[in-house]
Image 1: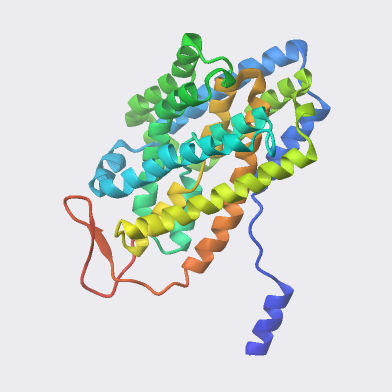
Image 2: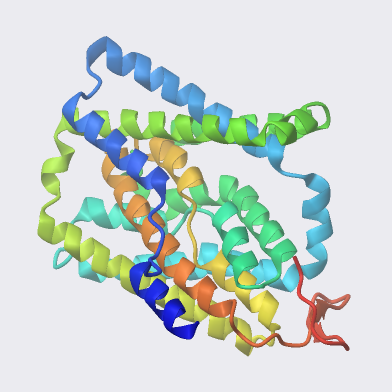
Length: 352
């Protein structure tokens, strides 16, 4: 029996997943390279992209359960840790990569890499990997939701402070554009959630397809404009290889910091898993629309590091989650009134 199992493993090796959506994104980039939108077509695509971004953030607001977010505040230490990793540690590491220009990175690629470090964490993949690894799933849900909510305000502010003129010439007009395209639709979704929340929940799968289609439109518009303006001539294979190497190191550092930092802060195993997966990731879904608003004509280069990092984090975290799922189960940890993790009696049942 064991011999047959060994043969099966040899025939069907376990491989890190390649997100099919990444293939769609790459196909969209290829379409923009071959048939970029020009003239009137570019104007139509730009208008549709603007509407798609507003609709995306409206859906984000309609989906976020205010009650769940408030209930999650009781585990405040975990959420503060994830937010600090996402909006403090990541940007500091992004700033440190400035020393790699022009040896490994060009200025535009560094701007894109720095922008990558400013966007919020993911929700779906953080929850999925936390569940596979037998971590604190409710905490991962709340941490991802808080990160997305905070990122709507914090990411543009950090971009204004750290990217400066690199972010499309950040100005008062840019702030107004961000408020109108991102914040107003999000608030409208939250306000209307009372009436449309059940509809959104019932049609989550269909609306998810709308989400992804809208992001593909944003990518096509951004890369079309980049092709027309000739920005892709700035990226050579050597620069692309350098970018991949830098991102691999960035991801490794964040995975180590989130795991051992959470351990030093005396979080239990389940909480450490949630912190590692929520604190080491960046959201492609949130970052692409924001880049389109912030960078304008330079958005195509700005989102390249984020697209590469997204696939890299999926592949690496899938392997880590699988390994964590075989870890011995520790005693359960629950947050006390001060938000600190404490060990409970019993056999250590897991959350989620």
